[in-house]
Length: 253
Image (cartoon, rainbow, N blue to C red; front, side, top):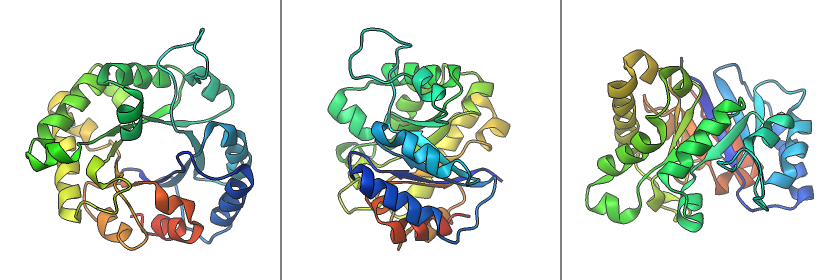
């Protein structure tokens, strides 16, 4: 069975004290996890050590960064490198979230570099892809997402790709209250897997976890996660509410 993920993306929210309380509440919940049912906390940079301390003695829970630089090191004020993340034992990093693409101009080429440098330092990239509303309305979503995958992930070897998690985020469903139907989610996840299969082979494609990242909530997670090619969720707003996120974790296959 592929690994199933419930990944909390706090974005730029919560004070340190609020974050500590949220972690404490989620980690004290009665949840059944294992090597194939995992929870990630993608917290703001100042809280990564806090997250590490909280999950240190808890199996199947992990910290994650929300971003990293595509550069190894140097005069890049305000940036954080994959090497820095590795040095404080942060095992996962979001790469190419739609908000990074939109607000900070991150291109497929830049994201290819981020994926590669994460892998170089043993940090698992959670590579985000997905189409905006106008592309979906024109029914060009498959070509759009394929281009993202091709330009950012196709430079990898099959062995490298096996160390990547993919998150499909329909941009039109992020923070809008809209959610892709379970049928739409499954259709795109299956398409992404078919694109990977043509490039890397069926055996590799079937092992890649593809999580859904478009307004996952406590009341729709079970239906979304039940889809054959949906391997959990990248959760934004609902991850800021402990009871909601706990229910989302429980919805994992």
